Image 1 (cartoon, rainbow, N blue to C red):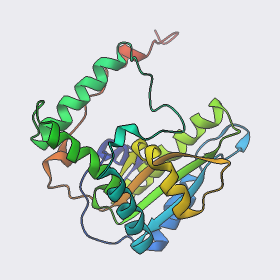
Image 2 (cartoon, rainbow, N blue to C red):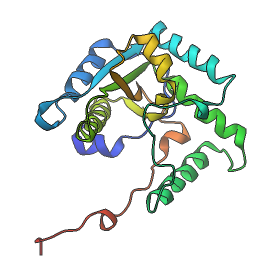
Image 3 (tube, rainbow, N blue to C red):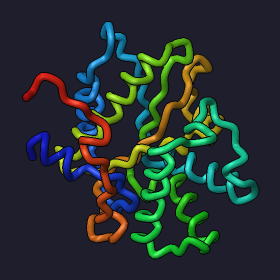
Image 4 (cartoon, rainbow, N blue to C red):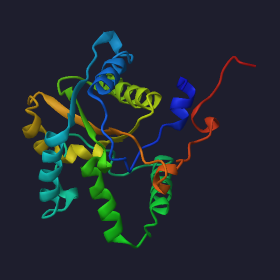
Length: 225
């Protein structure tokens, strides 16, 4: 699979097959993604790859916790996004929600169905591998941008190996459980989780193609005439 196909076929997978991923593949992906660009070659990423019983233990702890407390009440270490989204971002977020819950067959008024889907994030959507990515909290916006490049590169490389991924910012609400389970140093901030595995591409939700803005909405060209 060439890089263009890998990028075009990448999606946020929300249901994985019960099929393990070999350690050597996971290690190669993590190593390969470290070729992502970073200003001054700071390489500001720290990666924790989890599978088997350690992963099940984290999922069990989180599941027990959110069974008795609303997931939205957990403090995050950084804002997921601004409280008041302006346009065009508010419209894009709304559009995504409509597409996703349409694909899941969950109605707009089905609060219980939506909640259950959100909770599935904390099971890594049945993926056999969970990745947690952290950043030194002493670093700044430039390094956060580089970290996003690492996440994107990891997802594309995984696709190139026939795997699927789902980057999950929602895990930052469970940073205390993750930190304690994996002995993450206090100077590291949880940036996101990522599910990795073989996607169940027969599922309707995994056939969802989220809409993208036209190039004219976000790019201006100069000197090409």
